[in-house]
Length: 368
Ligand SMILES: Nc1nc2c(c(=O)[nH]1)N[C@H]1C(S)=C(S)[C@@H](COP(=O)(O)O)O[C@H]1N2
Ligand SMILES: [Mo]
Image (cartoon, rainbow, N blue to C red; front, top):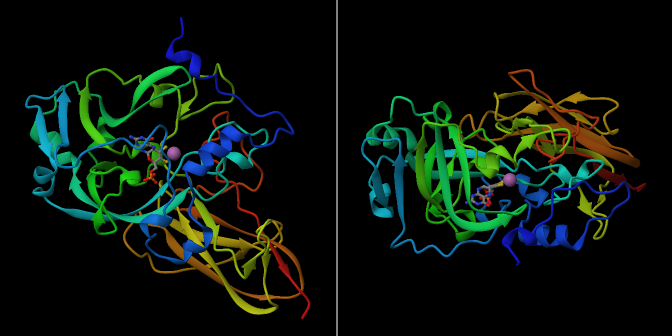
């Protein structure tokens, strides 16, 4: 007998010289990153924002879609889009980053969506705060977790499932958590979770459940796949690991000059220029950014622009640089108010999560 478990293999780490496979390419072609030149925009245009979709974009009809609030509540709720839109409306500018960003730069490489550094975007999300709705539903005194279920369905490592992620109750009740129905002032696009998704500012992408159809309050800790099996930092397959939660600090350089088609090595004319980029952290505000042009041997402090768009949005940084002929490796390192910063040497975990290793942008400055 054939069962659904036969379609997937266990998680795996690539061999020392193993190239990216056609399966990894298949995922990469579906789930694109931000083109790094789009770091120029304060707010990422929707089509340039990165995407991560575990299964298929589900077929959800916004006219009949309804969101339910169920489980350990005194008054279960059912809200269609019109009801959600009639509730208090707020907008937050939020940097979203996939927990797997940086995965393909690890040695050995965990085999999954092979992100380099581009799984990030900074959009404006409009919706209604979650906490008042949970309170209206009447939380049970012994509530512990809130489970968010999407309308998408698939199989992963042999486990057939709806995409589901839970937040501890205290995190779900934070005032910045939104049920969002607009991105950058327009209704959500299908690929970004239409008609309604969760936004959990400061948390890695997996928490921001798209195509949201049910919110269930539980009195036992949730042990579903995406919390208990995936999205844990572990050294090996038997290690229970610790959950992946908030975004580690990162700064990205907007690659200067112009690229070579194949290698994407940058060509930059000699002379004075501005090198800039963006920096963010989900733990605490970014307090400093330093820049290197020699692959991390020496560092120069960058200027930080005034925050634009609140505490959950990335910040622009810049430095003046006089480029002289030669070869350079540019990178930037963010530090946040909690003291967290970025490593130059790789830390490693089996899922390839939260790898905020400093970026390497190869630049050639030709002689004039
Ligand atoms: N229902 C559902 N929600 C989901 C996902 C998914 O596959 N299904 N992917 C998650 C992951 S891993 C990320 S990184 C973000 C990506 O959001 P975006 O595609 O809007 O950038 O959505 C999250 N929400
Ligand atoms: Mo992700």
